[in-house]
Image 1 (cartoon, one colour):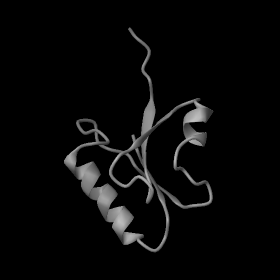
Image 2 (cartoon, one colour):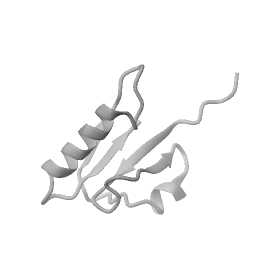
Image 3 (cartoon, one colour):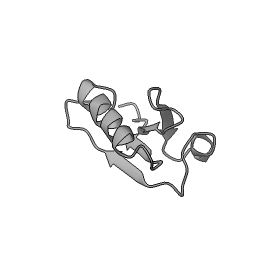
Image 4 (cartoon, one colour):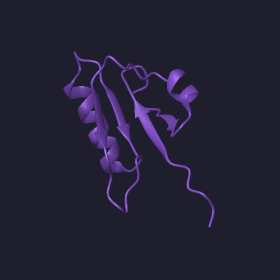
Length: 78
């Protein structure tokens, strides 16, 4: 069985529509991303039949980024 490559999708105010892929154990992907460690991070874990890019995930992403309009956040989905 091939090894699974676990990754996460990051959205911020700087990239609200196009995600950045963060890989487990890849410090460079995190360092080069728009992730800001001093900003609050909101994580969405989708259900078994969903993915981080489906309609529900996009709606939640947009809602979070709009709700925290004056506050910068990191929004991560798996």
